[in-house]
Image (cartoon, rainbow, N blue to C red; front, side, top):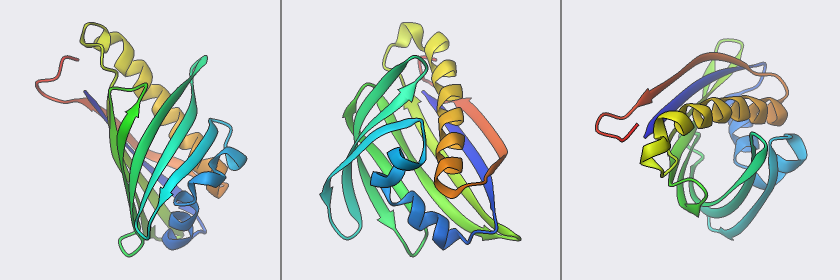
Length: 158
């Protein structure tokens, strides 16, 4: 299993404005090329269930996730319920910084094929990072990746 962490600086936008944009999942396909479709199927005050279709290299990945929204903390936590990836869980956090805000994205992913994990997961991690940068830029206009790392979880097959 790989963990991806990415920090992006968003100039001239407050964390609360960026959070509101990130939490509006159904607008993603209109604002960023990597996301082909998002359907929110269940909504409550702080929880949604959403179905995603996102470009992955030459194809598409599809999954359903449960999202927990915390507007006070400016966080979104997601947990995959089903889909093309064996495990895909993570979070978004928005924080105010000098001259704008930062978006902190983290996710754990496992392609579910232990014998191919060493080959598939690095590709998936790089593609995920590129897609997240594209998504954030599409949603908020301007964003610069300022930190990025991936790691393999100890005891995993990869």
